[in-house]
Length: 78
Image (cartoon, rainbow, N blue to C red; front, side):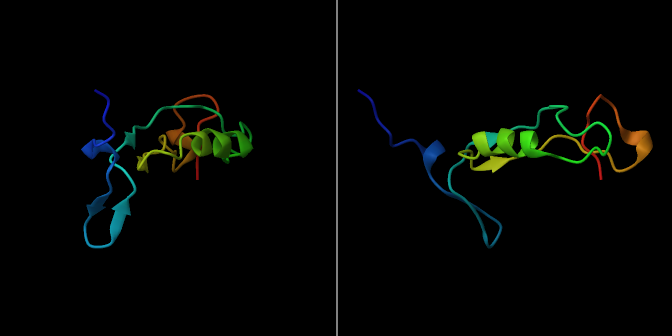
């Protein structure tokens, strides 16, 4: 028997006002798709996360906060 009555697909409230539409969490992955020169996210990054937008929560990849923090090719940065 197939059922869609799973708690995984029900909303979850975190704290007072933060409500996830479901309990699916997409964990961070190192994608290396940012612009190599500017380190800025681009349309490829946006499409990647748009394709995974059905998750209740997406934890994005690591982002360097200084020039010394870039650990891989095309890593995103601030």
